[in-house]
Length: 478
Image (cartoon, rainbow, N blue to C red; front, side, top):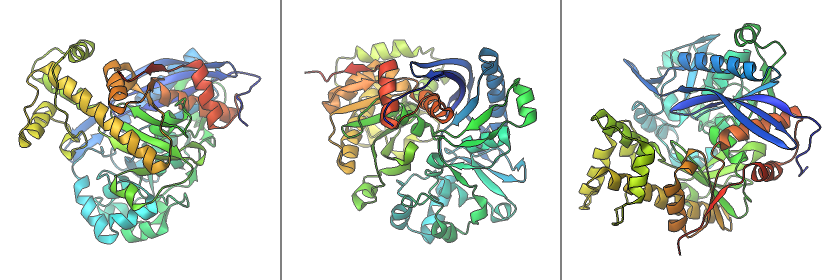
């Protein structure tokens, strides 16, 4: 069905977890309604423990429960909860017990796992099976660093959104869009890859049954319902639990002529296709085939994203500077001299630390004069991201057979007007920016469809977003 229809509007709660913050949102959705209200926001980030860099999942769960209680206070009629988060990170469980806080994907231990995996199955062979670009923090590389004695007593591995759903419902599942980022899912069959598991010495029972967006995970446990004040039966619905999968649902695009950029901590740049593209050209271009909603494939490349700017600001603040981001961006936009651009995908920029010094070192190693003040360095970051976004969008379209006419930019990056305009300028294509809350909207849309409040295919959902949240257009400078 191509049209969004309904006889009633419903209320849902969207739990949207990012790598630096999280929030709980009340969504109301019906034929003429697509609204959202953030009722809770909370910090999230790496915690250095003696064993390495971890997520504080225990605190995260407490924030989510408090947020859901606030959501039910705002809308007691909430019928469903959907969860999305970042990818690849996981917890190991024995029975009901979590064996330690999940590792953070930026923990340096992942480098040891790469060689261990590739000794058993080279990347070229892995790509033909899982379709993923090489990223050293992918789940299968993280697993290769685990103590075999620990894995021997583990019952299940759960990715972050599945882990949260387990804590809410007691049900162990693996939602497909996030499972597709682990390296353990076969890109062609859409099921766990037995040969990859065997090569890595992993037991199939470690992985929970797969579930697709629109399916019900389970009702809230009674103690959870009591804690958050749910008086009616509320269940958890599977959405595109990889945050980019949810974001792409809400990109108001025609996938035959558009590329998308989901821009936040990372910049996920790609196109949507019907089936995985497993050519050597895709592999060598470091593109990845990740699962999308309704069985679609997100052919994309991970660009470092606004992490570069936020980590730069943090470094300046550690040195005592008082940085206001809007003022900094205004100063960057006022820079008139040409600034050099750098390779935003250089691995040196992945870990937390002194980002300005790393960027300066990148330029110095190549005999290029680095920007000499904060505004110029911020402009250099924006220009470098814009160039990477433009180049990657064109490559994605070529690899995916898309007649590229527009670029859609969604997420927090839409608030950065300079980045949107410079991406249009450097690509020579119009950039349609928005919605800023694409991930939460995609989460809400799938819950609404699962509840029968709306119906329709992905294009119908995107047309609905275009009507209710029209994007802002940036044309390339003549």
